[in-house]
Amino acid sequence: MEKEKKINSLDVAVKQVDIAAKHLNLNPGLVEKVKQTKRELTVHFPVKMDDGRIEIFTGFRIQHNTTRGPAKGGIRYHPDVDLDEVRALSMWMTWKTAVVNIPFGGAKGGVQCDPGAMSRQEVENMTRRYIWEIAMMIGPDRDIPAPDVNTNPQVMAWIMDTYSMLKGYSVPGVVTGKPLELGGSLGRHEATGKGVVVVAQEAANQILGFSLEGAKVAVQGCGNVGGIAAQYFERAGAKVIAISDMYGGVFNPKGLDVQRVLDCRNQYACILDRKTPNWDEISNRELLELECDILVPAAIENQITHQNAPKIKAKMIVEGANGPTTNEADDILRDRGIVVVPDILANAGGVTVSYFEWVQNLQELLWTEEEISDRLTRIMKRGFAEILGVSRRDKVDLRTAALILGIGRVVKASELRGIYP
Image (cartoon, rainbow, N blue to C red; front, top):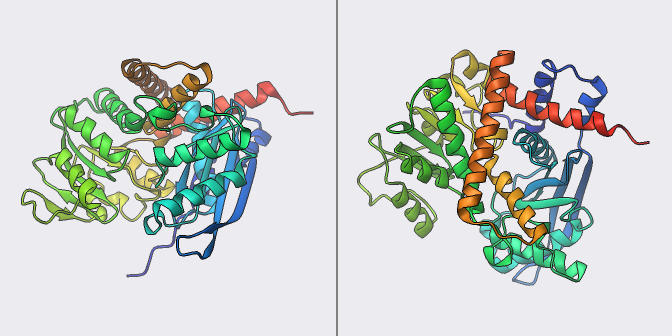
C-alpha cells in the first residue's frame, strides 16, 4: 500500500482562517496579518551525549500573536517536529486562548529529537541548552512555555532553573506545568483531560440529547490527555470501550477497566498486555472506526482524514489532540451529521489552568484544588455556550463557530490597538 503523503498542518490552519473570515466582516489586511507568525526562531545547538560525542539538535520557538497578551504554548520533543507544524500549533494556541477568553496570545516550540532513545541526563542537557538558546524570546511577561508531547513537569523544572540562573533570581512564572514544589498549580496535570470531559458532557446534553451515563467512548491516546480523559469519562458513568497508545490499542465492547489499562502502560510502557483475557488488541486505525457514542482523538495531528472520515461511526468527536482532523475530513463529517467539538475548545483546559498557575506565580497566591476545578469548569462551560450560540446564530458547525469567536476576538483587539507607528 502506498504511503499517504504527510499532511501539512500549516495548510490546515491557514484554510481554517479563510473559512472563518467568510463569516466575519474583517479588514483583509488584518486577516492576512493573523495568518502570519509574529516572530520565529530556529536554533541549532550542540549537546554532549553520555558517550562523549557531540550531537547537533535543531529547535524552534515561534510566537504567532501577542495582541491580547503574552504568548503561550507548549514545547514538544519529537523526531518529526518541523517549522510548519510549530507554526500551525502556535496559531491554534492563539485561537484557543481567545476562545476561552484568557489574556494570552499563541506560541509553540519544539526540538527534533527522540527522547525515548536518550538518557535522562541527555534530555536534561538538551533542554537546558535549548532554553539558553531561546531565552531572549521567553519570560513571564513575554512568552510562557508549557509541557507538550514528550515533555513533562520535570522538563519544565529544568527550563525554570535554566532561565532563573540566567536572570540571577528565581522566576517561577516563566513556565507553567511545573512540579508543585516549584510553584506548579494543583489540578494542572488533570486539566486538559478533565476539560475534554466537561465539554463532551455539555455537547452530549445540549446537542445530541444523551447523558455520559452508559455512553460508549473510544479514546485514541493514553497520555496526559487521553488517559486522564478516559478516567473522567469512567467516573461520569461512561463505558470506555477502547484506548490506545502509539503501538496499538485494547478493546472491550462491555467497557475496559481504565485504571488497569493505565497501570499496564505505566509498568510496561505499553498497554498491550497479552496476559489479560478480557480485552482484545486493536490498531489505532481500527479504534477510530469503532461504533461508539463519543470518539476522542487525543494523540497527534491529522488522524482523521478524507480516507477514514467516511468510516467513522461515532455520534460525536471531541478533539483532545491539536489538529487531529483535516479540513477535508471536517467536510465529510459535517455532511454525515457527526458533531465535532473542536480542539481549540475541547483541549483548552490545559492552557486555562496554566493561566491559573501563571496568575498564582505572579501574585504569590496558592489556590485550592477545589477553586481551580470550579474555575476550570465554569470557563469551559462558558466557552462551549458561547460557541454553541455562534453556531446556532450563524448556522455553522462548532469548529467554524469557534474560529469565528476566537479569530474575531484577536482581530478586534488588533483593530483597537492599531498599527504602530
